[in-house]
Structures are given as structure tokens and as C-alpha cells.
Length: 249
Image (cartoon, one colour):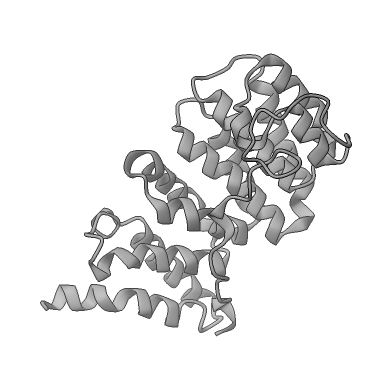
């Protein structure tokens, strides 16, 4: 193996071992800058699947989340485009968790991305999932995240984009996970307007049952794969292993 290959092989482990080891301000800043470069490096992100280099961005992303690196928010947002362009699983699976760790500081940028009709469906869905992740890891920010999702749901009933129906289905799914009963009027409005993909979280009856507003269906269920309330099982997005708190190293 040449020297460059050897160095790249060591980078992921070096990042995990060094990020946050020392609490001095300069060290953390330097580590964050290095991790951002690694996470967004095109050569590493496009490395062959059987190459050790391809793991470097994943380790860097997880480290930045653990450090709650606010300086990484905008650079990491750019990676969401890989979901639509390359069907990038690690971005879809791990980046929302990193934004969840970063917390409220990421909320404004995620809300802007969610509302941007020029972005792909995968990017916008990942932004919605990231907002739920913020709630999971920082419950004190729940109201802000519910408001961001509800606001987007209301906008798409006025002017639907080509991806409005699946995106609204995804947004409603996240709101149900947050038990956002207060968003029921906006959810109903979206269903009435016909801008919800009902294969994602069920129809309006299913949603009411999930929220505890209705006891049982009045009409036959349209999607037999849904359990009881009609909702699909939870997404595998959040079934990844817990990340270590690298700040405590």
C-alpha cells in the first residue's frame, strides 16, 4: 500500500481517537475543521465500496455530531444531495442522527432545506427526519421542530410540488412519532387537499387513531400491510448503534 493509502486508512480511527480528547478550545476547532474536510471529501465519498477509504466520511460525520459542531451544519447539509444522486445509504441513515446531536442550532438550516422545492425528495425527507432526531435527543426543542414540519405541511396544500405527496406523507409520519396532536388540523387539511401519499403513514382515519383522536376505523382499511391503526412499522433510519460521546474521551 502506498503512503497516501496508508494515511487514508488511518484517518477514520485517528478521527475517533483524537476528536474531543482534549477540551482546549483550539484543539476542538482544529479537529472539527479536519472532520468537515473528511466528511465532505468527494474522493472519499466516491471511493469503491470495498475500499477502507469509503468509511472515513462516516466516521467524521459521527464525530462531528458527537462534538455538536455548529460550524459543520452547512457543509454537512450539502451531503444530503447524495441521497438523490447516488442513493447514498450512509448519508440517509447517519446524517440525521448527527444533526440530532448538534441540536437546535441546525433547526433553521434544516427548515430552509425542507421548504426548498428545488431540492430532491430524498434531501427534504432527510431534513424532516433530522428534525425528529433533534426532538429525540433534545426534547426541549420539540415545539420548534413540530412548528417547522407543520408549517411545511400547510404550504404544500396551497401549491403542491411534484414530490409534495410523498414528502407530506413523510412529514406526517415524523409528526406522529412526535405525538404532535396539535398538528392535527394541518394534517387534516393536507388529506382533504389530496396532497398526502397515504401509503406512508395511512389515511386520515389511520392518523386520527394513531393520535388517540379516534377509536376505530369507520371504513375498510386501504392498506392491509399496516398494523392495527393502519400505520407502517417504524423506519429503519434510527435503528443504528448509539454513537459514543467523543467529548468525554
